[in-house]
Every structure is written in structure tokens, then in C-alpha cells.
Length: 125
Image (cartoon, rainbow, N blue to C red; front, side, top):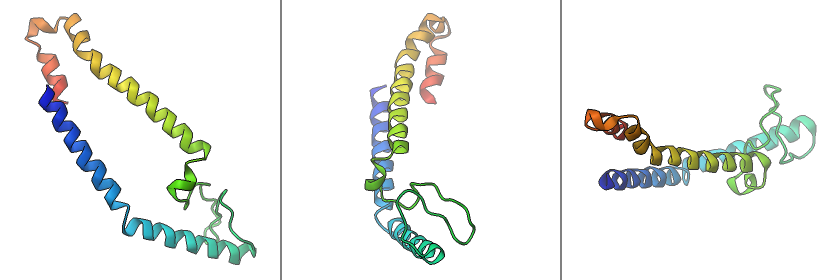
């Protein structure tokens, strides 16, 4: 079981590092270019500068989400980001609690009679 969790931690570290590295290049440059184009389109359409509270796309007339085009540092202070962070923190704790107590639950439900078959199946998934 220990090797399984160490393997999972290593895979998680590699994937998280790859995700962080991927955002350092072209996606960040594309985000900045899109943001600049939206600012120019907004100022051309309204004759005023863009605010951080939301951008209206002049081509389609569709209101963009208010965090659209903002950098991560600017998004940190908004309610949506804080709500998502709290929601994620609570649900990760809940998920880990479930995973931590599942073996005991299966044992109480009679998994020992099947040679811990269901526990083995659960650890595979």
C-alpha cells in the first residue's frame, strides 16, 4: 500500500509540474495577446478604457465573465476564486476522509469473508 501511495504522489508531482511548466510559454503569451485585443476592441467600441470587472466582446456582443483575461495574481482577490478555493479544500478533505475510512467500512461489511476482494478492487481504482 505504501508503494502505491508513493507512486501516486510521484505521478501527481510530475503532472502538476508539467501543468505549471505548460503555462509558462505560449498559453500565457496567448492570454496576454487576447487580453490586449479585447481591451483595444472595447475601447474602440465604447471610446473608453477597459475595466477589470468585465469585458464585453464587441464582435459578438456577448458579456465575458468578469475574470476573463485577468492574470492569476489579479484573480486571487475575487469572490469566485475564494469560493472555488474553499470548495476545493473542503471536498479534498471529505474525499480523503472517505478514502481513509473505506477499508474499515468494507471490513465491517464482511469483506474479510471474501478474502478482502472488495478492498483489493477499491485500491485498484
